[in-house]
Length: 229
Ligand code: CA
Image (cartoon, rainbow, N blue to C red):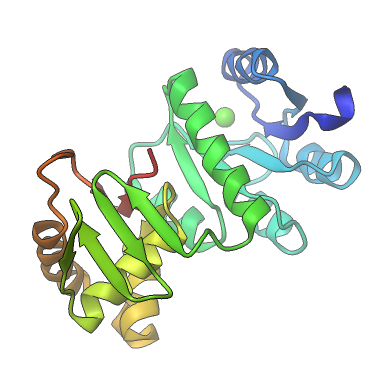
């Protein structure tokens, strides 16, 4: 039943990391291909037609960002960035260049699989459903209604628009820049203070008594992620 397995292309020069990725993925019924350089990876993407790509940003022959841009010219599959770097700039840059999400080394198998599931779900469904029901929240995007623990909650237009962008990317990180651009336009991408205010308000309004865990998670220095589980 090999043909039903999802194809994952791993572009990573560090052998221990690549082995960990491949054994975790194969144990979970993914079909993998491993390449150790940017050029070989870009070539493999053409032949292997991956449904998801795991790309290390630190490669021997090419800058990972260059590989990302090269793949993004034609590849629609989600690209998950691997980075050992602590700097947020790198992740943010990659996300703004078209990467779908990232994993910071070291990461767990659970994290890896969760990111892959979210990536595949988004690419298969195009846009996620018009209904978001998690952690006590019930948002009908088309119907413009939000309920918390069964009670209707009023959101302002801006709060609602922010929530809608996060729902469309549920489970994935959304950068500050992407959110600001979507809500306030391209001239506002530096104004992260707008977001802090509105996200703060949203969190208060969306606080569930039954599910007190944080719904809108902060990815420090990068952006926000709406809980998907
Ligand atoms: Ca590397």
